[in-house]
Structure formats: structure tokens, C-alpha cells
Length: 159
Image (cartoon, rainbow, N blue to C red; front, top):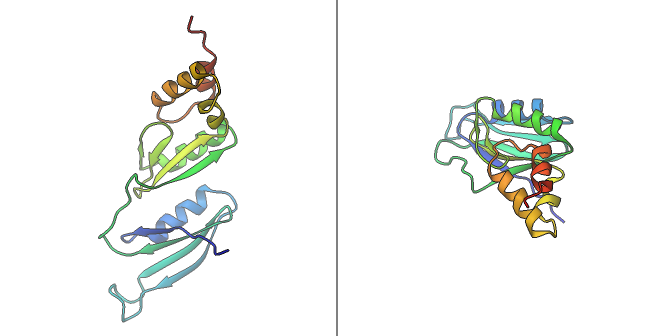
């Protein structure tokens, strides 16, 4: 089966973004950097692509120009083991970026991320409709997700 490698389009910040991401995620590295030649649409020597791995997941970042920018139609999901991980990734990725809603953020490069605690899916798929609804209501009131607050909302007695 072929490997799917997300390709992230930047104007000129591919290397800077790759360096930032490998500093944020453990077990990450830049594996290759290519440059435009004299025949390219950008000055020779300018970074063209950066291949990187974020904890084993391969990505390519390309300096393709200003024609395309990121939007919320695609995001990268980080499933965090606990609240400490949520806090770490939220802090590192919102620096210079923007907090959105329900665990979503845009980083300083405009790329959307979802930073989600491991227990969220169980809360949102709880067989009890009331518990599930309280989890969703609490989540929609948050920017950074707080697992303890979500669990407290689910377990709240509404009688």
C-alpha cells in the first residue's frame, strides 16, 4: 500500500515552519531540504521543499508561493494522552497563532490543528443522551479543551 504524505503549502516559510514543528513534537526531524534551481520560478538557492517527520508521520512542506493559503477545511488532529499534553501542544501551537473553539487553533503559519484529550471521544459518544449532550454543550463553550471540566459537566446532576 502506498504511503500517504501530507504536503503543506507555504509562501516562503516552509523551513521555518518545519523547524518549529520538529521542536514542538518529540521524535521529530527534518529529513531533507531541496532548493530551487536557476530554472525555477523563485531565485536559485531558495528553499523549495522540506521533508520532515513528526513522531513518525511524514510531511512535505513546500514554498509554493502566495497563491494558496491554509483554511479550516483541513486540520491536523493531535490525540493527547492527558491534560498536560493538551496544555503543552496548545501553548506551543497557539504562540503567535489564534485560539479558535472546541479544541481548534490556528498556528502562526495559519495551519489549523485540533488538540484533543484521549477521553473526548468516549464523552461525545456516551450511550446516555443527556451525558452526551452535556459533554457537547461544555465543549462548545471552550477554546482549549479541559478534560476535567468536560467530565464534570457530563456527570453534573441536572435534576
